[in-house]
View (tube, rainbow, N blue to C red):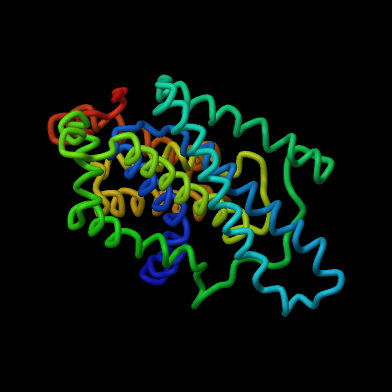
Length: 307
């Protein structure tokens, strides 16, 4: 039993990484007052951009360049994934902040697009609608872990410091609580909200890149498998606080790892095993109803601000 426990720890850290990156990104957005349920779509577009960029670079360079000399290719793919997430987040920010669209509707529309647009891209490049070609140059492993695993967990104390120990974090929290009061103190409310949403896109895009060129070696349609929504639940469960989010995502990551380990056994039906992370998500969100007084979101969350 002890051996199994220690064997599950590395897998849990890997499963936690995309959830943690995405949930931290969502935290920045919602701390500024912008609801971001587009996290699922951001992950998928980031994963698509990373995988396609990496594969296309390989296709054009590996024919004349030895693989040992093109180790920089996945880093370009990682950058493409991050920029892809930022681009989608910018669309969400533009719709919600400038054009004052309903934030839930905007996020839902992006998630719906993420279910169809990748199929068109895959059809264009690879002649199918389900997956990209496999890549050769994945992100490297540092002592058995992708660099993004280290980055995700390092971002927890960094995010805490930014939010609670810097003037920027104070302004961000003020914008999410009392934007009118923040504006009277000279804070650029709209600028802060744009920055926070774009930051959420950056982290969500990195999470997608981790899935397609770090964890796997190709893009697969709908490969996020609800991780954006689970990250959203973890963010709420963690009370929009970096360390709370760390604990919540570790819980979800451990559940996902356990579900994978149980597959192939006779403990319970496979359908129930696959549904385990989502059952936990629903349970957490249901339980939050009884903790509403202690789990208060930013006061201006979802409210439109105009100069």
